[in-house]
Amino acid sequence: MKIAVLPGDGIGTEIVAEALKVLNVLDLPFELETALVGGAAFDAHGHPLPDATLQLAKDADAVLFGAVGDWKYDTLDRPLRPEQAILGLRKHLGLFANFRPAICYPQLTDASSLKPELVAGLDILIIRELTGDIYFGQPRGRRIATDGHFPGAEEAFDTMRYSRPEIERIAHVAFQAARKRGSRVTSVDKANVLETFQFWKDVMIDVHADYPDVALDHMYVDNAAMQLVKAPKKFDVLVTGNMFGDILSDAAAMLTGSIGMLPSASLDKNNKGLYEPSHGSAPDIAGKGIANPLATILSAAMMLKFSLNQPEAAARIEAAVSAVLSQGLRTADIWSEGTQRVGTSAMGDAVVAALTASNTTLKS
Ligand code: IPM
Ligand code: MG
Image (tube, rainbow, N blue to C red):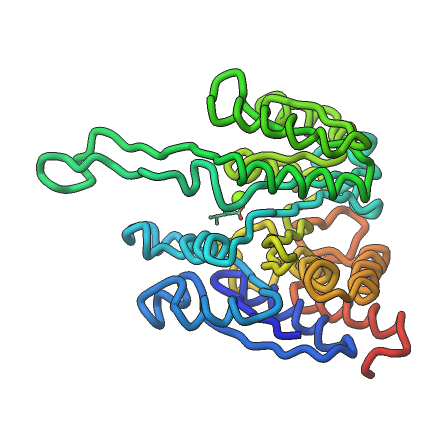
């Protein structure tokens, strides 16, 4: 099982280190290879996604990714900015299906900004299309001003676009995922305004004909944002486009207490995948040892389940995370009165300890 490890920037290196501790204690034959990505790769090689890093990711069975980005790169030309690394990996690896589960651990109901009764027992799954939409529509750019420079530009544009096959394949992913849970799919669109999303809705309805056992409803994205904070437990699976999914998944993350708890999987058509926390590189807290590593550790669990066919190891990691929360250990983002504040590395160590305690087949 070859895993490409791409820690990236900011807190990326700190949180990935904790996930590696957890993987290393499992008695499984991993081959781990680390490479630079994002701003770190730009600094070393002049490009956020060097060919060697992309090749490593292509050759691996799965990619474990931290986070990329730092304000100091904001003035670079867009193709050289750290974010292009993750967008490039998604595109080049064909990772069109992004799973962002939002699960509220019972131990964290108080950490949510919503009332406990609204989020207790929450278990929803956002499926975000990841390689199309306005993120990748052509053409895009700024009209160059007469002086030949962007700063004087009067206009900028991006193109929202989806093809039928792109919508069909994410629809199949959503309906199949729903079958394994509550058998309900809410397709989120903006069909009242945008042609792209009227088409999205039409294709969802077409594909739904293959899944009579799954319920499908449709919701405008603005209403979906409202319902997510009003009555999030009403949802089972939400499926939506790239940009709406980006926004809604951040909102959903906060229901769980902290975006530091939200893992993600980005899969290709063969379930090869890239696994990353849903949060970013958080340069403001980088190097302080206070970031929450649990989203990355839970992403590693998703990797074991979806790409490496190790569902039992995945379940053990998830149980260890739950055990650590039950012990009252909390990083700053999920801390509340009466719990014990710990740093990034102590949190990783605690998960390792819970794993070791729980299973005799683990390495000592
Ligand atoms: C995410 C991030 C990325 C996105 C950025 C870093 C390009 O916000 O994974 O949600 O917009 O997809
Ligand atoms: Mg985002």
